[in-house]
Length: 487
Ligand code: NAD
Image (cartoon, rainbow, N blue to C red; front, side):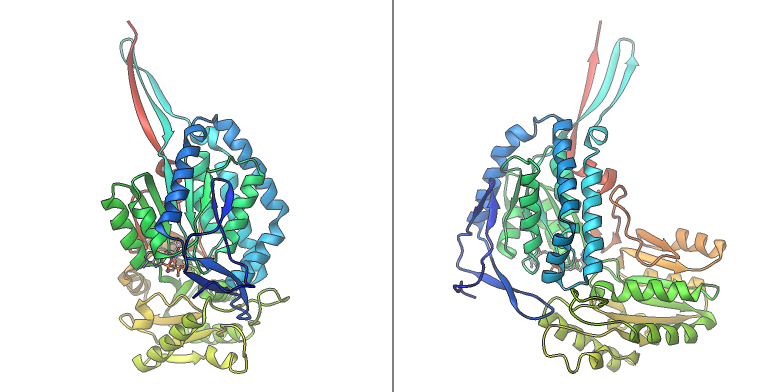
C-alpha cells in the first residue's frame, strides 16, 4: 500500500527523536470496531532497524553505567505517569485492538505492574557472595546487563506484552529496540513518549515499526545480544531458531490451546462465570483464553445449557460503548478464518450449540463475531487442535478426571490449564499430572502477576528463561564470578 496524503503516518522512535521510516511500504491500521483508518504504519527496512541499533549502542555506553537506584527512580516516575494516563492508554488499546474498555483498563494495570516490579531493581540486581570459600579466599557473583535487547510483540496486548520486556530489560542496564505488532502499533509510541517524559535518556528505548524485515533485522543484527518474542507458535519457533543460530539468547512465548476441566462437584455458577470471561473476553484473542472445556461426568448437559445461556447475554459491540463485553476480532481476514473454522467444526461432526455468526448478521461495520460454542468435540478434530484465537469454545465430554487430564495433555500446546472442583484430591491430581505451565484452580485466567514467570510449556514456549519475575532478571543480565585471595 502506498503512502497516501491525509492519513497520519506513524514514525519510528530512534535516539530520542521521531524519525520517518525510509520505506515505501505502509499498512493501514484500522479501528477493528468501525473499519475506519486510525493511521498508517511503516514497514521499516533493515536500514531503519540498523539506525535504531546504532542509537541503542551509543546509549548503552552511559546507561549501563548509570547507578541502579537512579535507573529505578526513572521507573518510579514512569509508573506515576502511566497511572495518570491510565484512561487515555486504555482508550488507545480499545481503538487499535478492539477489546472492551474494561479489558483494556485491566491490561494497563497489568502493564503498570511490570513497571512496579522493575522499579525494585536495586534488590533484584544484587549479587551473592561467600566470604570464605577457603582460608583467606572469597567468591562472589556480580550482575551486568547483556547489551542491546530486541523485543518483538503481538497484536493482542499492545501495552502489557511490551511492558513484560522493556521496563525490566532497561532497568537492568540494557538498551532496547522494540518492534511492536504492525496491527496495533499506536500504544507503543505513547509508551515510549511517556518513558521519555519520565526522564529516560535518549536512545535507551527505541521503537521501530514494521513486520518481517524489521524482525529479521533484529534476529540477525550482530550488536543485538538478546531477543524477547511473544506471538504465534510458528513465528516463535522461527525466531527462537534464527536468533539462537545467530548467537543470541532468546525467549519466545508462543500460542496456546488452554483446557478447563469442570468436575461434577464444581460450583457451576463460578465455573460458568469464569469460563465465559476466559473464552470470550478480548474476543478470545488471549494466549490464556479458555478454548476447550472438558466436562467430567454427568455435569455436562447442565454446564452446556448454562454456558449457552450466559453466552447469549453477552453484549457485542464497539468496546468504547458502555456495557459492551465482546468487541471485534482484529481484522476482517481473521474473522473470515474463524468462520472457516466454524464450518470445519460442523463438517468434523461437532455439534454447534451456539452460532456466533448469527449475532452479527445485520452488522455492517467492524469485524464482529458472536460467542460460538461447539459441544461433543473430540480430541483430534481440527477445532480441538488448532489455536483459533477468536470467540469459539469447544466442549469435550469425558467420564473421569483421568480422561480429562489425558485429553488436555494430548495438546501440543501447554500454556495454561484450569480446573473447577471442590475436591482437594482432584486438585492435587490435576496439579501433579497436568502438562502445562500456568494452572488455575477455581479461577478463569491464571495469568501470573509480574513478579512470577509467565511459564508456558511444550510448543507454547521456546527457550529457558521465561518472561517476568526472577526469570526476567536472569534473562536480561549476565554474571561475573569473582574469586579472590587475601593473604
Ligand atoms: P504473530 O506471530 O502473527 O506476530 C507476532 C510478531 O511477529 C509481530 O510483531 C509480527 O510482526 C511478527 N511476525 C509475524 N509473522 C512473522 C514472520 N513470518 N516473520 C517474522 N516476523 C513475523 O502473532 P499475533 O497474531 O500478533 O499474536 C497472537 C499470537 O500470540 C497467538 O498465537 C497468541 O497465543 C500469542 N501470544 C502468546 C502469549 C504468551 O505469553 N505465550 C502472549 C500473547 C500472545
